[in-house]
Length: 346
Image 1 (spheres, rainbow, N blue to C red):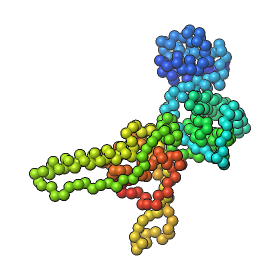
Image 2: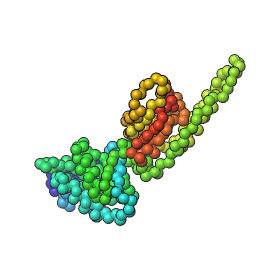
Image 3: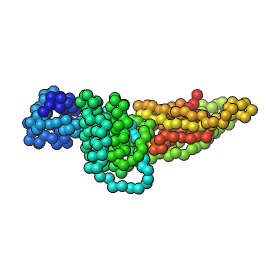
Image 4: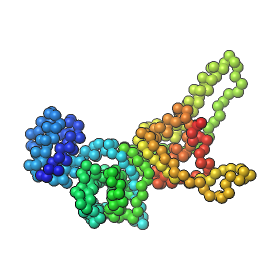
């Protein structure tokens, strides 16, 4: 077994929590159950990793087998990577039979026609997800196994989830191979990113439901307040306002947990409204801008704006439509003011 393969297997085992090493090696399936019985999984991880390497040498492991173990690790700990969503388009609406063998052949052929030094590994999962691991090299260097790109493609859907390596120059090659292998003709990034791969799937596969209604806030009730009853009435109105905000938040966001989204952006095209006598705009051209959102938990952050008093309730559709617009490349054409009053409170 090559020394670089042995070192890569050793480092991969060291990444795994000690209590899960045996389980992942069983999922890997490269070592027999009899071989696994010879390992002492209660010793320090460095000794375990050395023992795994020795067994892999007996089986003459190569980099492809080592890459499968890395896929298994990343599938279980997928939240350690940042994922971006890509959507593909066909020239027609016809349905085609998906052949996994043909997909792999086309993907490898397209990528290797552009770059010889590349390691490509596939692993299929039960939810029709094909995990693809690509380790990139150069015309003069072997592939760097420690900085691979990952693609999770769900067959029979136009969506792919990509976790790219630091070599962004290879991303176009990856996208070209993907559309050729899946028989699409165009691919675009949806400007939707998160460490939570499952949350991104919930949004694009519409497994997450959210209401997108627009409400007109009702003014607080109450007229002249007697001085002796002022404190009681204020407490009552505050309670009613909190209940109203809670109800509107529930109607807009739902009662369940939000998908964990960390980054989103969309392009906004709007027309300014102004008094014609002011002559602010000589040309009737729309104003265009790029709106970006980022947060450790974006949707939960938006949901907390109104209860925290940082925005009016209900929130502007510009905010609540984010998961919905994600399925449409985040392109919004709004014929209103750029930032409505309920966008963010002063």
